[in-house]
Length: 237
Image 1 (cartoon, rainbow, N blue to C red):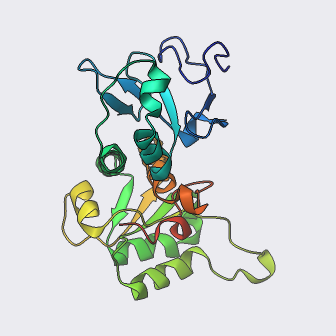
Image 2 (image 1 turned 30 degrees about the vertical axis):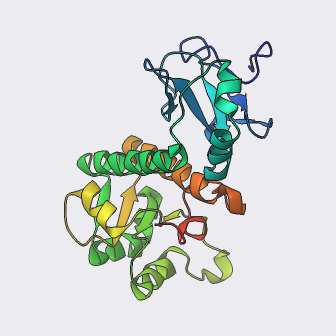
């Protein structure tokens, strides 16, 4: 439930575990917490993002949008919301994007260690070509700076023309990380394509990549509805 006494602030993760909606301090719109970023005041009096929603202290919520966060900094929404003279770094919007990207990279690395990622064009192509295993695949990943030809070939396997069977089911295609970032996550070089297998670790990665895409593209009305999809992320790097 929303805390009506102070709609902009929560009382901390321990007392608000059931909350699913919050008010954006910039737009004043009530939205699902998955579409917002929580901020708290650290011990030094500086505003810090709480992307995992676990940090102690009262939290202020801002729409998961670069523009919204930049506006919150510019128009002093944090000081007004926290009712205190807090310190806000002028590069908070950029710093938050880097933090969200690092969070997605770390989650992909954990999924890989759990055996829930295959990488390399041939291995990804084989996984996608085995129709009976499609139900075990959670998403297709392309490096945002990957060559268009390879991306097009694998995309054709994800969204084939099924004739009388109707269109293929929606399948997330993630393009929000660069090849260098995929290399870092998977511990190998020149990663352009990968496939994520269904599992707990891969669900965490999908959630974090969705937040990253939303943050980058929400201002262009391209918020991903189910995951960080290709159409919402091809322009990001």
